[in-house]
Length: 354
Image 1 (cartoon, rainbow, N blue to C red):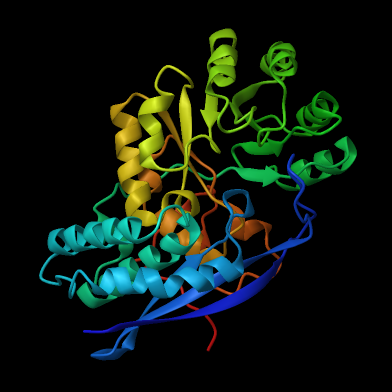
Image 2 (image 1 turned 90 degrees about the vertical axis):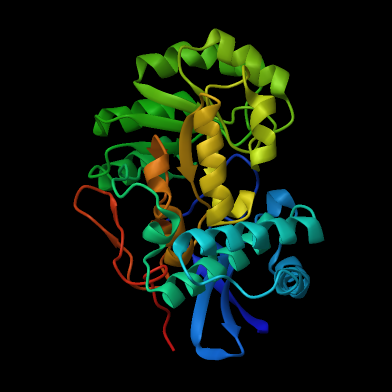
């Protein structure tokens, strides 16, 4: 068999400006949708999403550049086993290992290929992605994220999102406490704060009592990724769990975070796909971490893949597609309880316009 892949870049627009502590475009972003085929079954298409995260050095151009190398690596391990889900998963793990051996980093590009392979094999076996992966059917509800803006505008957006059982508020701007006060005035549920590496240690320590007072549930990545000593220092002084995001990229980072933070945020676009995310979540549980399953601002393709492993997480932050004004994918539905509805269709269960 011979694999081939086409890559279609998409320019995505946000419904509302979405700004985080690091300087990034708050009006939109870009992603790459992959269509994977085997020449012996040309009508069977595996769909994937390769979301480039600039923080990790990825762009649309780097994804397009490394895709041939990744496909060549997958080609080298031979045809996938399609006799059973167990055999298929063993082959998918080998494909992931082959991509890692071919090139380091490039988690977004690997993620796109990994999701497309899972979708292809799910369709080939007639299995929804969750059943292919054998992950729990019951999944936590997703929260909803709101970017940095004036306290008044953040509160307005929080009020519009009041149906969600938790809100994730981006902080690290000039008015963090004023913003959280404004949100608390209109929203009674748990608040999660994400500083995206934007705080200094003493600032974080000063803010913790105020965050406790305001009913904040957790603090995500307050300090730069490699400042593990600072993260440990704050966790020792905080009754709230500190959750590593930028410090927890792949499964290889987990052992070094033991005793540093209480939780980790696993994202498919960081760790290399849905298979690596499942393994990272399972390893994080073994190590005693609280587990968040997060996302970038992906379309419903990436979010559907994440939803298939959401039953392994304590907290779910799969709302990237909800932030978009022009999600091109269809088929993923959010229930009234803010839980993603896992499809019974083979593979991802989402479709793209012709």
